[in-house]
Length: 312
Image (cartoon, rainbow, N blue to C red; front, side, top):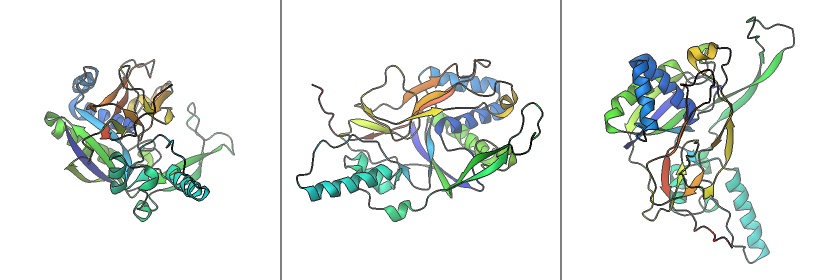
């Protein structure tokens, strides 16, 4: 499999965050509409057989990448002044969500996050976010109903979105057509009323990341659900995904999926050598539709993690 980078321009506000499972769901609908149901079944079957033809990252703003989650340093600065400086550095590192490419490269090579935050100007104001009020619509009547039935609705905007893909050689042409479908049809919820409108700027081979030769772990570029044989020693954050079926399935009475706990992009784990992928497809997320699965694969980047502390 080889690396590729897709750059998309956001031409409207988005109502959905850029998560790998949502992106993959759009690509699956593209597979069904462009190539047919049988081709989609075969495509998903390759994941169950352990030979995924396409791995997808979360979407990231511009040229930024997720901050790898790292263990706290066990060393304590000697002087009170040094302790204060260390506290400020760690506070800044905790607040940062994304790193520039240069910062990311230094962290995966073994440097601490708090020591590499040098490109604040490059990170800049990467996201505009606000909350607006919407009318509640009854699923039974299709109308707004009583007066005052308002709810807050979150919207956000990035100028551009970067996606990182690993694609099997035989699947590259189809992957390009699926990304074209995504760009043309829009992304996320409420795309039918103008949210998530996109323009594809590029789909290019990517040289990959400058991982060190002594890598002893990986950082995931996507939210994922670990499989039973994945490593468990690492640092992670959790997200509970409340998914909803897409396209014509969204019109069903049971349109919502079961809640799913996922590990967030940026989670790190010890493993050497680093595998091509981790995670799995999750079955049973929609009881009325047993054929529906949830994408839960990690797109890993090898990195150098601090040596784990031995347990006593």
